[in-house]
Amino acid sequence: MTLDLFSADEDALPSHEVICPGAVLLRRFALPHEANILQALHSILASAPLRHMHTPGGFRMSVAMSSCGTLGWVTDPHGYRYTRINPENNQPWPAMPAGFLQLAHAAALAAGFTDFVPDACLINRYEPDARMSLHQDKNERDFSQPIVSVSLGLPAVFQFGGMQRSDAAVRIPLGHGDIVVWGGPSRLRFHGVLPLKAGQHPLLGAQRINLTFRKAG
Ligand code: SIN
Ligand code: FE2
Image 1 (cartoon, rainbow, N blue to C red):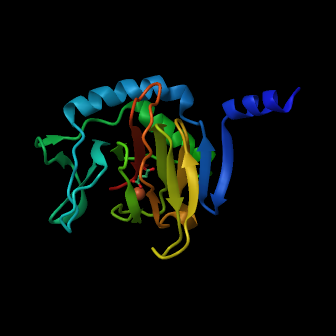
Image 2: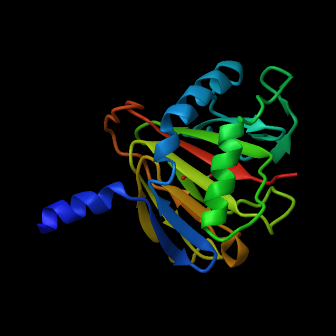
């Protein structure tokens, strides 16, 4: 077998890479589910459209967001929080599809976290130049539960740092179908996404979609 053939095979397989204790990168883990995810997303976003929210400091986020599950994440001049009602339309957030729950549960398990049952899925849409600055996910009630983050569409560079914003961050290229899980000693590590480079993804076009599953309530 030539080296080229070998690496082509290797590129098609899922992989399991430990980033640091409690943080695992599962490359291509979501690929078998891409059609189901995209179909479900379509109907979720029809009832809870993506929108650019503002930070408590008054900045418009470059990432457009929505949510599904019993809790959705919002930010406005009053702060960051989870709500049961989407303030845009005064409706409950769309239900979390069974396929989302199963995928998040399976990814958490593959990363060593048993019994993960998320009640919130944040949907982030990055268009070229959109970014997310370093932050901690800390609006959830129970930090014993991990975060499961699914990347779809255009590639992005994920930054994964330490417990202080100023700690050095590793840069991890994430592609379509890749999942990062962080919990345990890594649960409160700072993380972010560098500005998205322009491009065209065969299924998603000129955007990256990220789903983050959380046990928020
Ligand atoms: C997030 O930290 O909520 C999003 C991370 C990502 O888009 O990969
Ligand atoms: Fe986050």
